[in-house]
Length: 170
Image (cartoon, rainbow, N blue to C red):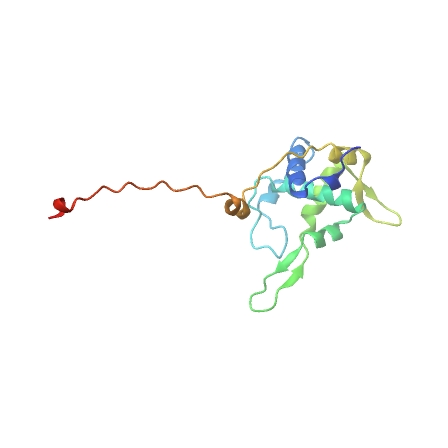
């Protein structure tokens, strides 16, 4: 029985898939992507150097799970709460340009194809499904707060105090 994407840890799978995507020459972060926010709800640009590959891996995983997905649905998926100061926060969709370019790059690589007809959007090709199924997920350790709290504390070495003779004090 072949292991499918559903039997793999999602976070570890995305990390492994992002590493595999770095080897595909068609998938490459454009120059402008380092200076652009991912949506109006964000305050800063992504700080990770390999953000483009991580988000592309996440999109490909969503295509595998959901089947046919359009840009608007992905915009909603990756949107977030916009901080409006004193006013209550509201949900805002993410940027469509980044998602569209990522999907176009995946199309050029042959992993994704456009669908028209009764449904509109994109879906994985046979090559794309095989590529995602072939990803081997290794045990990826992430350092988090839980690891620090779950580790047994090491005993601190006792300091040796010099013995004080009462005769020396006087």
